[in-house]
Length: 165
Length: 165
DNA sequence: TATTGTTATACTCTATAACTATA
DNA sequence: TATAGTTATAGAGTATAACAATA
Image 1: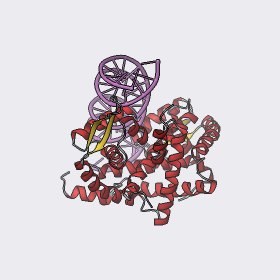
Image 2 (image 1 turned 45 degrees about the horizontal axis):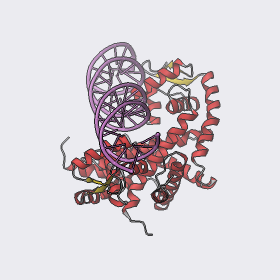
Image 3 (image 1 turned 90 degrees about the vertical axis):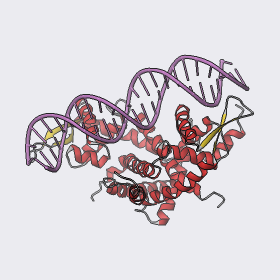
Image 4 (image 1 turned 180 degrees about the horizontal axis):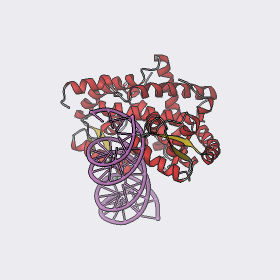
């Protein structure tokens, strides 16, 4: 394979698109049968492991629109994977929590997801895989800082801590 | 390591989605006014720097469908950025080449793209940026190799083993 | 007035199949 | 028959605005 040096610029977008598409394909296959594929899995995953937050907070954290979150939660709730609980402190808001059944399904799918991800990363050595994950997480945190969206795991605490603008 | 182990799994998809979305946003801004945004840029870029290939070869290299390539090339050709030349060896096929004007526009946009990418990668040190690009390119090459087959071979085997086509 | 969640609409992207012209 | 390219259609994804309930 011949690589020209001036290819450096465009290859970032090419690489991101190719890898992201491959991930979505693999993740959708691993989450087949779940309400909204890999997106439903992501929502369920966030609802299960984080402090129960509002729909808007969840949507912001995952980088999807809050109107889309409504549809995703409708499907997940119909499948008894998550619940919308009223927030006693703010009656407009609803807290999203995973049901016991949701946690079971999540644990079962986690193994499949891990295999799919491993297959995607199989071209790298274990230490390279670790490096890639670290760099990607750092980039993602930075990218979320750039946009009005702020969705990093620890950054969410910063938001909710200073939620009085 | 106080992080729950199952969080490692989901963060790959989260990171890829966040970074890819941020790239598309930045790239679309940098290629504003071009026929099909960052996708048109990618096609023009590939047409300008590679050996002129068929539309199908170009589509496979960029990871997009050949029916989509038709629309993209229609727009790019209408803007006089690329040309469809007949392939003398195979009259079914058409070779995609960038016009002189297309190369000018490409050079002009390359600088903007580079700035946009730099902004996206600004959270990493220069050496980390180089590592990320290298790892990503390696991953993308690997993913493209098994994309035509199926990306999640092992995970898919489990599913197809208990389901009828 | 601002915000949370919902709904409706439209626009984009993608996936699929059918068609032609060549091989 | 198979392949390169085109076209048409339907589906999913996304963005936007409007609305009701609450702050």
